[in-house]
Length: 388
Ligand code: SF4
Image 1 (cartoon, helix red, strand yellow):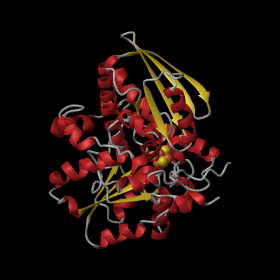
Image 2: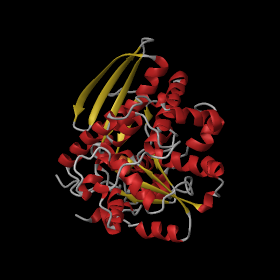
Image 3: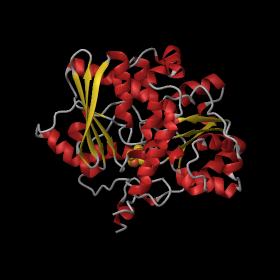
């Protein structure tokens, strides 16, 4: 009906184009750093005639370097870090028996929805920032010093499948971590207008140290990926005997993991905000007893994000999820706990999960926006589903 575009309070649905900001920063001589989300590599082929190219991420690294980016990092690295930190947060809540179930918090569409509609659940949201903001924070706080560049001289460009990530980067408590967010469609536009034929560009690896990721980190790009990664860390730390997944209905899956110590972890994987309403109602009235809830606002997770190429319908999203599975399959490391660059970040700066230093860099706060906005219409940054 188009109402969503006119009413959207975050600007996320106005498809704000930020390409000019990137060129401006380059002209100003900023130290350009790019970082790319997992789901972008599963969809950008559609815009560039590179069907099923599993090394497209590497070609994009090469392209970005050739137009002036000094470093290109992988947001999947930060996804490993998020899963690691979230797993420890969950263990702590379990030990204390409080703030359960723990809801994931990497999706800004969901976080904002919770702030408006379910402020009573804000304490249940994991306080770990999203991978985009985690990497932004590390780069501005620590990496800038390592390379001897003032944080304000760095321009960090985040390439995302998601229009809501533009809003997230501008949240006041996260401001300054990420400078510009461009979507998959905007990156495609930059590539097309440059005249580059990406097919003939050879792939290059992401830069180290924030270019290494496990299969788990890469799987953040589709529904179920965050919970699977957290479970992977718990498995390494506690041991898991058996995992069973039941599809409850479209967009709602229940995974039950039996731990070696006899306990069980019940994870609910939900996509679509209509489904969130359903499950929160059931959690509130005690019908549903779960320990972790993964929420993604878009159908099938970030592969179906609002910044992805058109068409963005059910079939296309399912295909992207399959492509991402194949991309994940070619990566060597399986669990976030194997990501040695992530572990050395703890050695160097963060000490251990949930430390004071980790809280300073990796965690955030949420706001009760229901009260602040006094019942204003809030429309969330969902993509347009062309299949409906
Ligand atoms: Fe953005 Fe959608 Fe992914 Fe949420 S699920 S982070 S709104 S692309």
